[in-house]
Amino acid sequence: METTLRQTWAFMFRGYHLTRRYISWVIVFNFYALVTSATVALIGVAAHDYQLTLTLVVGALLWNFLSMLYNEIAMSIAYERWEGTLEYTFMAPVSRLIHLFGISLFSLINSIVQTVIVLVGLMLFTDLNFQGANVVGVLLVLAVSTVAFIGLGLIAAVLPVMSAERGAEATHIFQGSLLLVSGVYYPVEVLPRWLQPLSALSPATYTLTACRKLIGVGKIASRPGHLVGSSLSAVGPELLILAVMGAVMLPLGLWVFGRIEAWAKRRGKLKRTG
Amino acid sequence: MECPAIYVRNLRKSFRKRHGLLRTSQLAALDDVSFEVETGETYGLLGPNGSGKSSLIRILSTLLIADSGEVCLMGHSLPEDQAQVRRIIGRVSVDAAFYKKLSTRENLLYTALLYGQKPADAEKRALEILGRLGLETTKFSTPLEEMSRGMQQKISIARALVIDPPLLLLDEPTTGLDPRSRRDVQSFLEELRSREGTTILLTTHDMTEAERLCARIGFLARGKLVAEGTADELKRQAGTATLDDAFIKLTGEGLLTDEVRPEEAEVLEEV
Image (cartoon, rainbow over all chains, first blue to last red; front, side, top):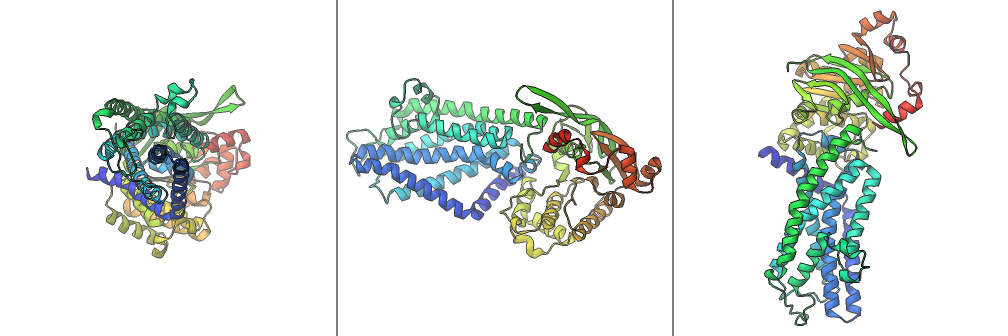
């Protein structure tokens, strides 16, 4: 048990020190995330439409959290390949479960911190006040959807194992597709018909729908300073779908990772350049 | 299964080479390689670039799966017992791969934690090893990117040793080092073998290094182990005065990269 804890800590230790050493880049990324979110939110402010502003703010915050979680996990292998350390991590006596759990845990903490920074920053641009929102329900939905997104991240993380450069490119294409079809800033109904079925496959779609209901977005009674958030029972279907997605995607992600690792070892793909 | 520290029998590994979109061919990186290394012995593998040395080290390091053959390290078979093998091996590769922004201390502690070691114990051991390798302790907090290649390679050796492995796999550990650094590393490896009885598999281009460090030497050429023995035995077998000449005579090639067929070198260097 002590060994497992130390091995998990190894990934936190590495992540913390890399964040510290790359602090100027971390500041740049946080600044960019805040500015992007504020720019989107101000579209609602300019339209003098409180409901639109709220829709955009919730979309920006949740997408910031979910995309960063996905991206950090999916790109973790690519970062190791670029540094050349992937072989050393793979030959250490640490199970892949602990390895990926450690990476996911650090990514989760990182994503929470960045989202809080963006949330605080957005308060400077808009009259954000979540009084009346079902915050506990939102946190519960986020916790359930986090499992599904970690699973998605693990599935995407195999792409850089297969090909260092192409894999990293593919993870970004996949992330962009999620942004397009999940209804982050607009209802999925505005998507072309042929694209709409894809939104049903994205966990972000259900996370956003559930969180907007719980916050009270779209309710006529919701006013600035007094939101009318739904109760948890109103988002039961979304929670159930997210739980099923998590239960499928997390083990699927681990399984796929294991299969691709074995394939990479047969084909000699673990070296720095791939 | 009872076996020596390293037991390799009839090992084969080939890689697919792509010619355009549809055509592929197989290129043998290791072709029926067999050898054994006794516990506490230092065994040298000599061969030109593309001869299969790194592929062999990668198979022993659990990073590559062989097509066929037997591999057994200190009683553990590969690839079945890879979890156990990972606990007993330390590896140094020719490219000192680190998190270059992190300091020596951070890189070494990360490795120690991955192996489940207590950070305080690992830090103490790391400082001791770096001292024995002739590296100033003030460098402990310096980011790797600010260090010379020689220093980085010494830290790479420290990383392999901080986990205290009974078996060391060294893939050209002194390539690119200045003469002083090379001598520091060689002295340290001799000391390690005599003090701690560590089994060492060393691949190198340097005949002098091989003669100095290795009890036995194997010549690897085009994926085949073409000769094996002590340095004196190999010279006697070839009827030459130097190990360099023995290598050329027994393998039919020199140690330079350009003596490897370009198409082979290209594929083998990838792996």
